[in-house]
Length: 291
Image (cartoon, rainbow, N blue to C red; front, side, top):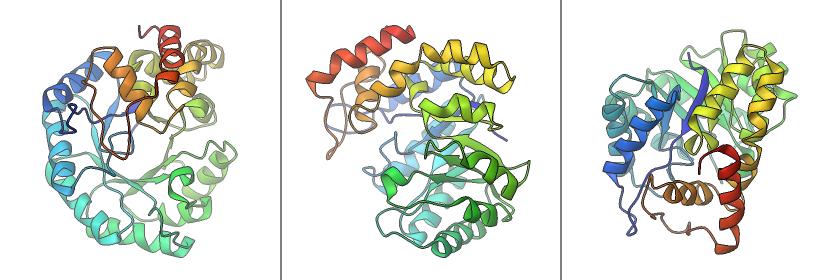
């Protein structure tokens, strides 16, 4: 259903923290022009944790409106409350998204059975394609391949964003979930290899800054051209690291502001990039041809 470079889009804000809808439209247009294959609205990179529900729903709706059917839009609708995740997913469906992305419930550390029941409940409540999202480095919760396999049997759970960076999981998830289940990387540094191992693409932070090059890496990897994929990805290797020198999306928002794509807006408790990291991020951008 989804393949290639899917951008985990930032939510642009002005300096007082309010959402900049004009810049959001421009970003969507730019990604369409650059060949990004889908847009994820209001995920982790989109500061989902600091937008209230009304803002969350409006940003998803505007992203769908601005995309105008040119690329699919995936709404980030995960929450650590099952009821809230259902409400956000219903809102996303009403906004017209093509699928929802649901992070594992964070902070409260559910069991594997709890994870299964949570995602099953959301899927049964809202009839829209849903993608699981496993990022234990942020959630303190790791969805194991066996749980993914169980959830893959739910009709409208169609894939997973696997952000552990553990490439040994790809074969196990594929074995347990079947050939039609979509496996997407959530870790830019290992995305190329995940695709070469049989994954379908990446939900990418790096694609915010270098969308065309990220898509070209994915295309090469999807075609099995390891040499070309490695050569292209080498130009992005600095960004894969530099965009995480502080918590995402701090560095990527700074980079986009440096490119003139968005204003200097971010919400507390996140802060603007520390001065000591500006030059390393800038150097990585130059390496990727973004400056």
